[in-house]
Length: 282
Image 1 (tube, rainbow, N blue to C red):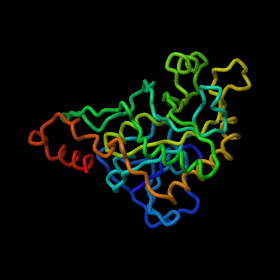
Image 2: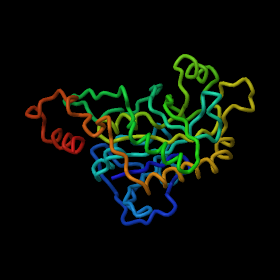
Image 3: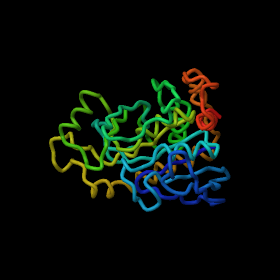
Image 4: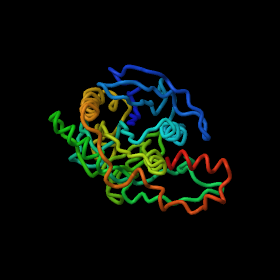
């Protein structure tokens, strides 16, 4: 089962025929919105708007645990995210699409970043945090549409909601060597790995953040929105083409991430811990 998580400006999917809506309760609270189960070009998928159906949640207010948990509990094995991002490299121009395969966690607030703790211990490998097979399939879909998409990029995640300083932008560009900057993919990507879900995000570059000398190129909300529409349509076309085709088959064992990661013996787990672990490991 595939789920699509929509970012800024993506609160529904045109052409998705709704079958039902799931109001899911999780051990971590409520997800961002009801999860829509529907049929899209003959395939059953789930859809969840990351910021809520009316964009009412800041990046730091999104309940990432509940979002990923609810999708996993509904049988999701693959997640494709759509996200607005800033470009930290000259060759990724505003309007371009990009797929990140690496993440740099620059979050400093108190976002919950794991399903584990409170007596249940696991250390999941995130050396390769995204699904290469899914990224390859999306890249192939883009090629079929004659749409260019940057590959093998590093996404630096910041707190928000403020837009960054020039010093921060230059640090992420030069010291981290990041290519993209955004506010939402961490901890989403890491929770997906803990839930043994294949994960990949199509980043839609809207600006050059603020590392360039020309103040006219420094990111503003007005700039983001004005440049977003046409690029978003291209991202949706890539997504549509992927869904119409054959689903990616995972080659780097995303769906087996917990096999050697959990240190707490099953016999030592409480019933609540066993229930939690059962959902994650299914």
